[in-house]
Image (tube, rainbow, N blue to C red; front, side):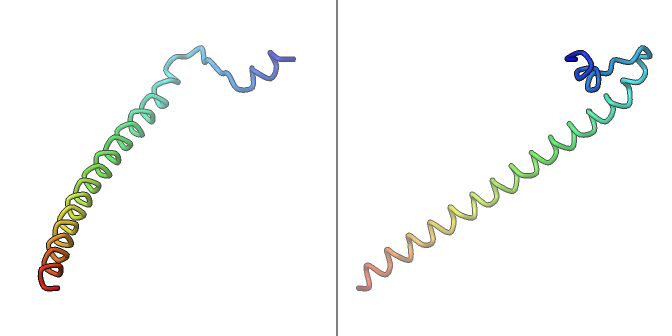
Length: 69
C-alpha cells in the first residue's frame, strides 16, 4: 500500500533528457529570485537612507524648537 502511494509522487524517467527542461526552469527561477532579492535589498537601502535623513531633520527641528522655547 505504501509503495502505491509513494509511486504516485516519485517518477524517475529512464530517458535522462527529460531532466533538461526541469533544470532550465530551475535555473530561470533561481536567477529571477536572485534578481528580485537584489532589487528588494537595493530599495531597502534607499528607504533606510531616507529614514536616517528624516530622523536627522526631525532631531534638528526638535533642537531648534527647544532653543526657541
